[in-house]
Length: 263
Length: 275
Image (cartoon, rainbow over all chains, first blue to last red; front, side, top):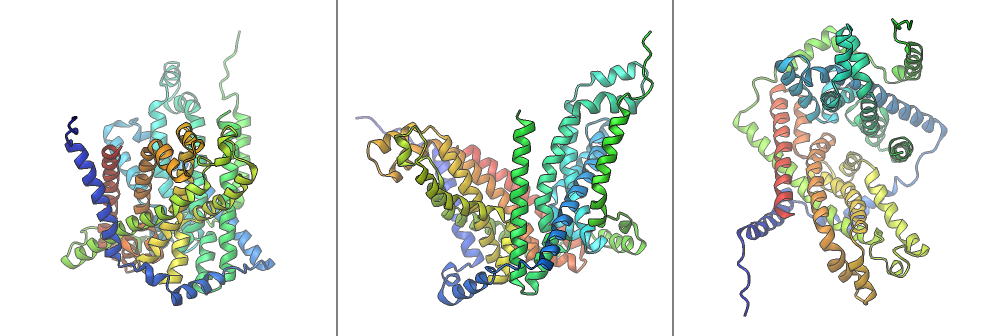
């Protein structure tokens, strides 16, 4: 008769982990005190149904559609300018972060980039609204702050991996630091910088449409206002517009990627 | 003799491109009301300066720390409960949407009949709609429907993440080696058995690692959703910001960063242990 293989400690540990996961799930439901049964009982369910039903007749009047068009353009403008600002600031921070100005500047720049990146766009937006007032200006700045952290790190990595020979050749030929950077280093990393910036722009369009919830302009603010005024018909149209915007951006970026990137 | 160009020979096209880009962005400037000067306006700057100066010392009295601990636990619980509910929707959705278990595909080299594909489309469309509306919009809607508090956050995460998980699971099912499940289906086994013994062994590792990654995202999302009133750390940050309590905001932001780092470590541990 063959003896069953001894239970190894790592297997035991795995079972322990699975058990801990299950306990965590049960504990979370208990801690939050969510009563799913009560949520889906007759009265509250019919109430929710009525609320959901009020979204089913979207408002397509021309005045509202014009407002939505303006909101969508505002969202696009916020994301485009936010990304552009972020690319400039990110490049500015990427130079020290790639170790071009000594180790002290490098670690400081990295710390700054990490802090910028770690705080989500929406939290930045809430902070900037306090500093710069309501409106799309705040949203643009919030996007720029978070995205510059992301892009700065990606740019710094691109800079570190770029070949140093072209810039050195220009320096040896008598060119200045700036000329060496512009004509030696930049052409090598330019395609990467553009690709990263476009990718972040895509993300930022999605993000810009919800930043308005804290008062930072765009479609989000329209949605927040109309929901607060219990105008579900108008809100439904805004949600449809958001959905269309996201799907259009997805389709467009997919097409661009297929056409130009993976050729 | 070749005369070296003293200037950038490509200066004209470059200038023209830059001008064109600026021209395209110009209407954006007015639309987005971009105005950096607001930040340096005297009154705004002094207000903001006072708020930022409040960041240090961090708020750390006993009562506040208790509140902070509760909010952090609530955030973790929202993410975990939301993921558990999302799995309940995602797994059936993925099974319905995936081509991997198609009976008609078995005899047609992996391509299901057109009517079978047509039956899968409604499920796929549902998953697309669930994940295309951002989670914070769902949260805002649920806050209006079920009231302020963590329930709205849990439901929002469950809905958005079920769409994402369902789509990715369906793709994972289709990407594993189809031969075991096809053999089982041809031999007459029911589809669930073919899934459990033919597809799951190859797909489990990838599914698990994606789920853990999504749990990490859910923690970040639940903090953000707090800003529209869906409970957890985000709601407390929003409240403290409105009261201009700089020290509390700073402590909570640091807690948030620590939480994200912790989630990163836990997900790494789970992935290395369970795979």
